[in-house]
Image 1 (cartoon, chains in turn purple, red):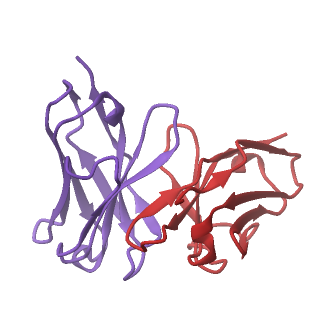
Image 2 (cartoon, one colour):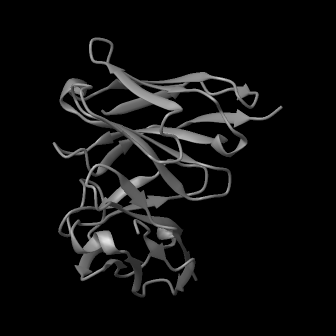
Length: 120
Length: 108
């Protein structure tokens, strides 16, 4: 059974930093591209970032580029999102999602999310 | 533009058919995928590629595409299909993607 379990979400002040983690199991992690997707309270889904199976290629939404860094440790079957210079508009439930094929799409499995609140 | 536009809400009588549409320029180049999200739950993939369903998704869900519009059809809607539905597609760069604005489906 595929499982994705996010952690690390907390309340953080504007301008602060945070690292989210996603622990994967039940599939060949180092064969899979991985994504972060977020959802602000009461709002729709927003794609955040993609990392290739080997970590060599990374992509970011314009809204987070230069502030967030996606990474992975295949030996630990873990995905990460380093979030710096956090803003109120980054408040959201952050999901990690598995990429379905070699292109990294679609998102065929999702975690339950971890809540990040940016507030003073 | 890399936007995907959906109708905010649609309703359907129990057992009837409803079609949800998603419009955007990127759909001329890439297939849409569709996600169902029920309150308090993570999204679930229901349709991807050229009308493909993941294991466990009922065959009353189907997808189609024409020009800049992708559609998700629920044939014989059930009470458990009441949810928010989001389309998703890669953008013109191929390396980013975008979600649609979402459609709330109410089963009457």
